[in-house]
Length: 200
Image 1 (cartoon, rainbow, N blue to C red):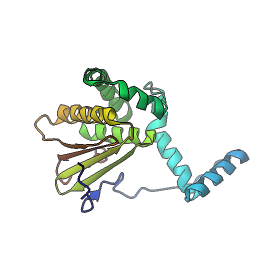
Image 2: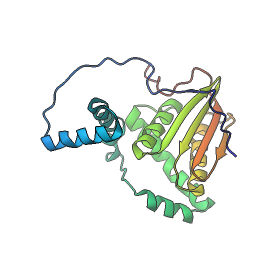
Image 3: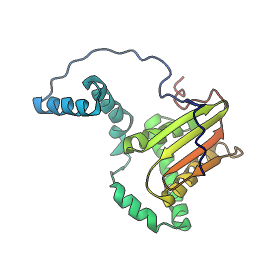
Image 4: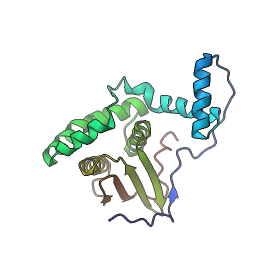
């Protein structure tokens, strides 16, 4: 059973310092501008915010995805495949994936450590449309992933996160809460841990 008492935590924000901005002008086809206007109206956000979201997603993930061999897979296929997975299949997939994760983090972030690894996983989930969140309560860090793909994918996610964190912090205690749709990892990383500050 998941603990819903997460209201006293603070959320880890993606960027802790104010970024400088500058204005630029692009000439775009009228049809494209019209589509952006419609989409921003439907989402209830300004066109500027929508275009920024699109460009951030491209810079953080899309420009790398074809280079690292990522292809989009419909959610229904993943759900169907998940129903067929057993424990041995999950272990084999993680064994195959883990070296690829390291290569991907090195390629996208320019280095390989826990902070870069966590940030890359967050970028991937955001680009894939999965809900994820990172909350901090004192020294405890709470990572929430909502995938809606079924229990087997929750088991897969839990084991993958275990492998990632164990590779950097082999002695650290990892506490999981898992349902058919959600995985929550709680781990003590210290109040100053921030996966976005490795640039400093």
